[in-house]
Image (cartoon, rainbow, N blue to C red; front, top):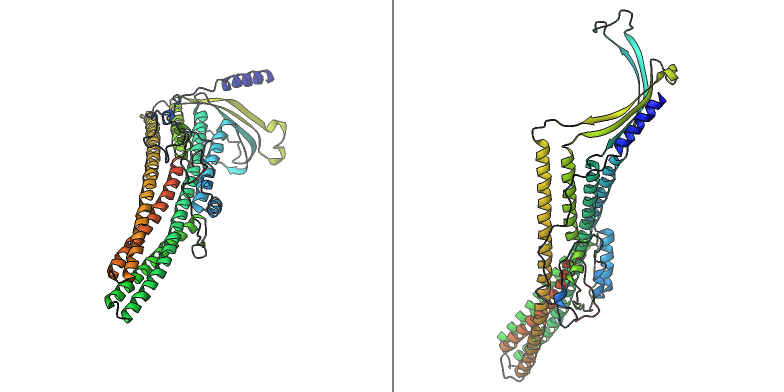
Length: 485
C-alpha cells in the first residue's frame, strides 16, 4: 500500500510539473506615431535645447515627477501642497482604490497555492423504513460523526491562474499610476488656485490704491466746484469713478474669497475656518528649459496607467482562452468517521482519498469563443485609449508651451501699454489742474490706465497658471529649472 501510494504521489507531482503553458498573446506596447520634436520651442528659446533630438515618449511606471512646485520658491504654496497630500479626501479615496487593487493581486495569487479546508459534523439521523433495498435488520436511527481535511490544487497547465495574477498585477500598477495622476491633478489645481488668489491680492492692492487716488480726485473736483472753477458734472463724474472702483474691489474680494474656499477643500479644511493671509510677494514664472520629451512625457502617470491597462487586457485574453481546455486539479481528503464519538479517533475510523480530476467543457453554445472575442476587443479598446492618451499628452504640452510663449509677448506689450497710459494720465491730470482740459478727459484716461494695469495683472496670473499646466502636462515639472523671468 505504501509503495502504491508513493508511486501515485510521484505521478501527481510529475503532472504538476507540466503546468506553465501561456495562452495570452505576446505583449508589446501599442505603437504610436513617432514625433521628432514639439512644434513650439520653449519659452526663451536661447536655452541649450537641441529640438532635433526630441524623441517619441514611452510610458514608465517609476518616473513620476516629484515636488515640482518648489520651482516657484513659495513657502506657502509648498506647505499647502503637503497638506493636500495629507488631508485631501479625493486623494484619500484614490489611495483606497489603490489598496483595493493591491488586495486583488493577493486574492488572485491565492490560486497559485493549494487550498486546505477543514470540516466536521456530528449528526443524528433517521432513515425511512420504506427506503429501497432496506435490510430488515438495519437500524433506522444512527449517528454519523466525521472530522476531515480537504486539500485541493489546480495544476495551471494553460496559464489561467498565471494570467489572472498577471492581469491583476498590471491593473494594480495602473491603479498606482491613477493615484499618481490624481495627486498631480490636485497639486496642479492647488497651484492654479493659489496663483489666482495671489492675482486677486495684487488686483485688490491696485484697486485700493486707485480708490485713494479717485478719492483725492473727487475732493479736488469738489474744491474746484466750490471755488467756481469746476462744474457739478465734474463732481458727479469723479463720484461715479470712485464708486465704480469700489464695486470692482468688492468683486475682486468676492473672487478671492471663493478661490480661498476652493483651496480649503483641496487641503481638507472647512471653508468657514480656512484663511490665507494676503501678501505683497510677487511670484515669478520659471523659465521652461525641458530635456528630451522621451524623458518628460513618460513621467505622465495617465500614459503609464493607459499602457498598464493594455497589458492587463492582454493577459485577460489568456484567461479566456484557457477555458477551451480542461482544468486539471489534484485533490486529497483525509479524515475520520464513526457512528459514535468515542471511536472517532481510533484507527479503523480513518478514511482517505487522493487523485487528479480533469474537467472540461464539451459544448457551451459558443460562450467561450464569445468571451475570447470580448477580451480581445477590450484589449483593442485599451490600446486605442493608450494611443489617444499619448496624442493628448503632446497636445497638452503644445498648448501650454504656445500659451507661455504668447503670454510672454503679451506681458511685454501690455507693460508698454501700462507705461504709455500712465504717462498720458499724468500729463492730462496736470493740464486739468491748470484748467486746460475738462475732467472728462481725465476720467477717460483714468479708466484706460486702470484697465491696462488690471489686464497686465491678469496676463501675469495666466502665465503662472500656464506654467502650472505645463508642469502637469509633462508629468510633474521639467528639468533644468534654475531661474525665473
